[in-house]
Length: 369
Image 1 (tube, rainbow, N blue to C red):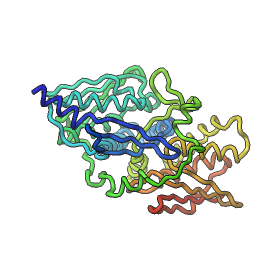
Image 2: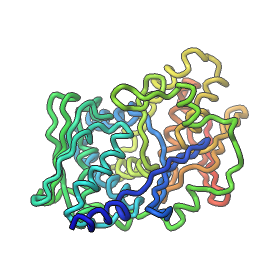
Image 3: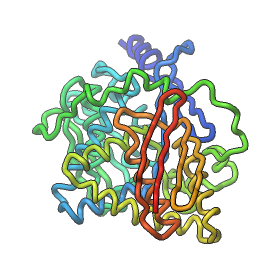
Image 4: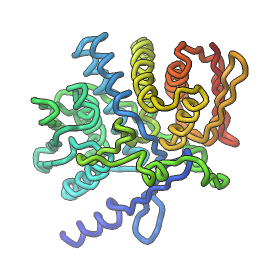
């Protein structure tokens, strides 16, 4: 039994992980033993303050119960999507503790300290995640997104629907999520809709990218200490926490808010948080051109593509090469950029055009005053 277990762990479940970082493009490559490539994920970095502000605004406008239900669904869709991108399948129960530890270790590396400790009860199919000072919910006091994420991940690994509950108190000093298969069903994601596009790899991992060493990148931000890792293991950009996630997370957020007809919540939260972030990042650079340069550097360093900004009179155009593609489009990215630009000009801009093309990968966003 031990030899079988070691074989499964080393050959099937514990691949080597390599992070590819270049201007505008960040992705990780998971390869099995003997160099066989298993999967790739296009990664973007998000501001904790933006995500937390969206959740807090939802709580304020929808009430705690409905907002928690909404973010649980977003989290569960994210968990399922995350596993589908990694081509995950049901695992034998006897390797579940080690597999979950491997997955949790990946999340810890992104600042998700709710996965600091993990306890797996194989007989009862109960998994408990615990930690403190977890990114996002330390600011919202609501870990429903992470409860949903745990439920989604385990549903794929166990091959049956799993739900989760949060048992947090004294936030942010105690975070706990308990996932198990015998909880009453709350939400079952549509796996077919969460499957990555057939051309996901072709669009997100371009092979013909010209050398752009002169541009900003996540690695350069790290080397020049614009991005640092805090004592608690979180990435910090000028004091703001950022965290990595597959790019699909943004379209899942947009999808669920649009389904309840409350895109306005996203608008308000993104505009408020973007203004705060940009004011801090640009406090020593009052000129508009310098603020625009900060925005383009953020797009490059956080993995959102390679931008080019053009302003003519009352029109601002952004051309973004090699953006992270997903089947739901670019509406969240357009809204986020709108928020940053509105912060620069102290006036809310209007999105007048959103076009994308696949060959070569290009996103065109046009705004007007």
